[in-house]
Length: 185
Image 1 (cartoon, rainbow, N blue to C red):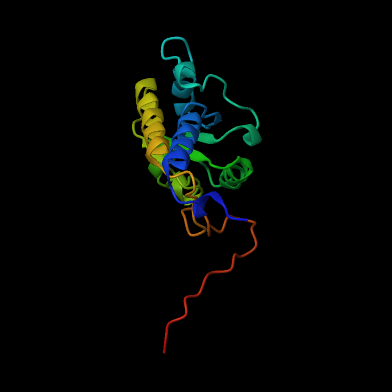
Image 2: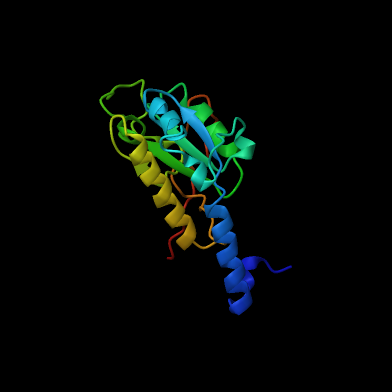
């Protein structure tokens, strides 16, 4: 049975794709992953002064199975990395990630063995929100940037298995097989 990617785009399927993009963009449900001081700014974004309910995101989901956006707010320790990946894997497709703050994006001032030097080593990141800590305005800008990426993206496109975090060996995991590319003789 042919999938959606096998359809030729015409006036009907082009419009259906636009409706699906509009629905996805206006119903992003975040799963918060607040780990440090950036989480306070993320909570402030949901308060009445900044009110992310106008984007359909007023309820932070407690279960990853109900969420399609992960906002990683704060530094990620090596012990928390497998948990972060597990929550990401349990989220429904399509799923997106916002890295909030310098610590989540690059490790920040914590350049040591205990802190992951960028959450993009664990999960693929779609939008980075810079700052220490980034204010609610910065998170709102990151959300609007993500909405624009959803609006302009193809609904049939999925992340490949070679994306960021796909072949990451976390502590305690079995070694993952690496792909070998055959060269012609």
